[in-house]
Length: 195
Image 1 (cartoon, one colour):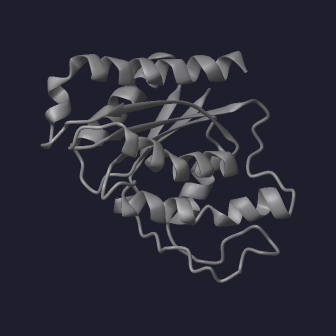
Image 2 (tube, rainbow, N blue to C red):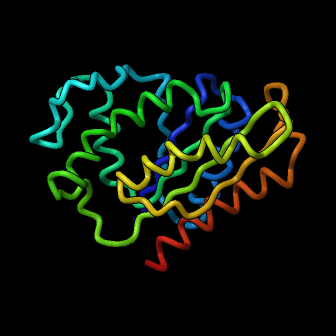
């Protein structure tokens, strides 16, 4: 069975990016994937300490809930990252999680080790929302997400951005965008199956 991990970068449940993530995961589920939602804000995740503890092993020495995320990501064939835009970038909670992927970057690029045993092409998508209008900010926010996916061995397959969502739940007034999120989850699983 295909495992798809959804990572919700918002610090609150029921927000616009959280709703879109749920739709995308429902789309993946409709194509037969096993889905799991991870909310970094609800886990104990310290920021990267830049301590060099992973330099020789590719394993983070900080003992916290990131170990759960490492395990889940190593078994995922697909990943859906969702985040609101906070001050022109992804949320602090998501960025802290991404920074802790440094150990996998070390494993992959310095130590020439695999971060997953999965043999096929892993796929990833990025979903993001913002209150103000304008899509240019999303491209900057996508950069750390792209770096994360590259380090984890996910191909950055697609993205879905929605602006002008100025209050909690505003995405519910955008049924076409919600349909696109659902279809994005379906497309992710289809691409994984194609190998």
